[in-house]
Image (cartoon, rainbow, N blue to C red; front, side, top):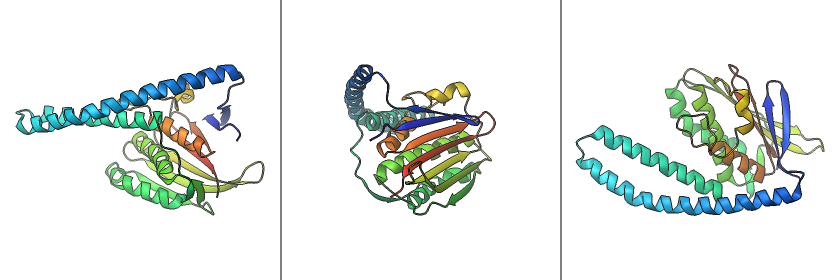
Amino acid sequence: MPASLLGKKTGSSTVTVSAATPNLQENLRRLDQLANLGLVAASAAHEIKNGLVAVSTFVELAAQKSDDPELAALVGRELRRINGLVTQMLRFAAPKPAAFAPVFVHELLDHSLRLLEHQMNGQMIVLKRDFAATPDTVLGDESQLQQAFMNLLLNAVEAIGNHGELAVTTQTAADSQGRNRLNLLIRDSGPGIAMENLPRLFEPFFTTKKNGTGLGLAISRRVVEEHFGTIEIQSAIGSGTTFTISLPAD
């Protein structure tokens, strides 16, 4: 299989970077380091997650007797945040093997958007959808693809804040060899991303959010590449951001 590509768009120009490196020995060394790091991270995250069960139980019992409900709520919220971070680490370091089957992308997007409906209504976000891809099927793992889509949609909703617009579009296009591809575009009307942050956007643990984990976009990229797809971003300060996922159409 050809190496997966990640395109990073800044303004009107696009720079596409290959996932492979020209130096084979350096690439193998880097892969070995990442594999070892992944094992350590997965092991540590698993132990932390097990320990959090006892801690969470104790905090819940203590909260019932606490004279400071605000502090108890704060501790509970932070424990949930840590648990979420550890869960993301486990998914990133030790993802489950993909179980490929035909996936109806429009149904998957409808389901994901329904999950976000309450949040978007609360933020008074206008949703525009244009599902034009025909057919809308891809070969992939439905659970993993939904996770990737949800990460991007949540990222867009958080970027918009209040009184904005979210546009979700699908298209069918042919690649340079005439093979059909399904393109998914997620565009938000948020403040945009600074140019200096774009090259690092998909790095694990890199985030510009105050309470972000820096794993959502990294996981999305990994899922897309494992489905032989590409992911691109186009953003400019004051003009919003557009993520484009391109997958082989089934």
